[in-house]
Length: 258
Ligand code: PLP
Image (tube, rainbow, N blue to C red; front, side, top):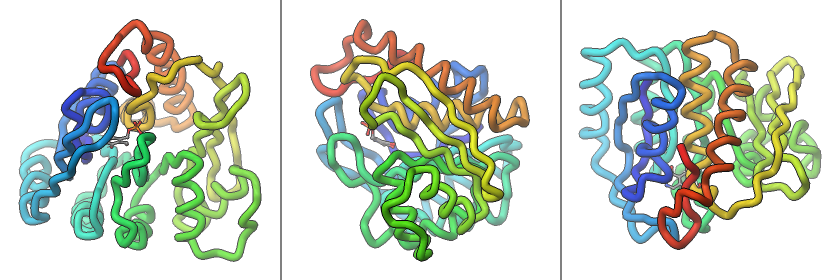
């Protein structure tokens, strides 16, 4: 199971979180680095994006040697990185591709250049599942450029995205208010399924999106069933959120207990 993602040296988000989530889901994790991020639980200090020739060498080093059952794509940073990952995916077509359309961190720091969003369409067309939060869903609807309802429900927005790129969309509601956290899985044919979990009262939510998408990809590759994978990954993340406050990593927005 390969994560293509940015890093978090404090281990809460990004590639480091992905590898923990993959291990928790009983997968064998591999990692290709898109961006080196100097960050902690308070936010991002700086980002270094290695050249895309080197990124391609990392990707090829994996695929020349190892059978990849599933890929999770996280932070990409720049349009060139988006295109390099897209080209590699088009050539290799791994059986399971989950894209977490990482755009802005909870801390407010941008993790994808504004100019790179436009390049995301070609990547989404190669994905099986995309997992936007509310803000990312709005950006994807704008990118879809369809004349659907701009003020519609998250489910309507997700359907626009699902139809535009023929992809499953998990519209995550973790940032909403209310006693539950509801994520809606929407298929291009309009089928929807809502996954409801309790809202866990914690500010230690750093890296939840990274962890969820990695767990889903791992479970989907093993079980071949998207609904089982989403349900299983969400249940696991709920337990990880329950343990977050006891973990005590950093003094900001800390990680969950992977
Ligand atoms: N850092 C990296 C490398 C990420 O990929 C992400 C999100 O996917 C984040 C940070 C953001 O973490 P959060 O918004 O959960 O704090």
